[in-house]
Length: 50
Length: 242
View 1 (cartoon, rainbow over the protein chains, first blue to last red):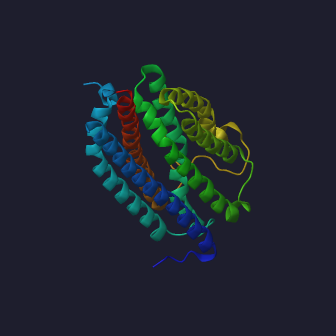
View 2: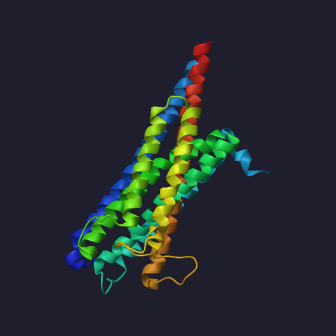
View 3: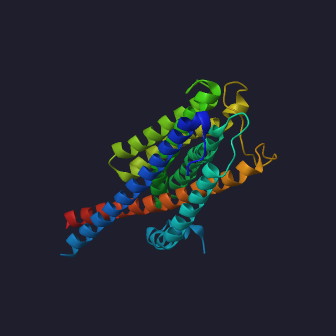
């Protein structure tokens, strides 16, 4: 499945793993923070309606 | 209809809410296509071997790291001149994405540099200006966190952004300005014919467009988040004064 990367396999694979982890982390954190912000606003608006 | 209408948070939320699903789908498909094509279906370079595959991450990330700062500069100038909150919040929303892109460019560059240059790091003009840009990104975010009043924070970070733009531009043109160091010149230019073969060029182009659409997706998502947080602070403050 993985192409033959020869003597540079560890370099190429580590570059991809680090980059994809950083990108994935950014996406996950952004989604979680976004969901949290939505909940905070809903709670605040609910509080003021009471 | 004027573009400034979208500086209204309500209109921005409505439009971005409609755009987000398409942007998400487009960025995911472009990134998947570009990276799978680049990693699995490109041949090794005769000089660089398989390390050439790092180009599909390194070049788009470096390009974004510089251009995100320039987008933040434009948004900051809009804030300073027209006082539109959405533009200040968009600049703030872009910063963590810029930090991530800078980190990816630095890490992948270091990993690529070791087998090609014999070292992970050198105090080369482009590498050094990139490192300074990274520090500016950190300082920018720290300043937003440190100042409690949103408008004051937006003013101060806008000024910091203008100062940091010097390094963003230096990162872009360092190789041309100082004819020294290990880093090569630009791989892709708008004016000259590309120095790389078509078998690398097209997947690279797809990856670049994928990174741009990912940025658009994330900056919309994060700007919406900051608008909601700002609105909730305003709602609670109004409630407290009742």
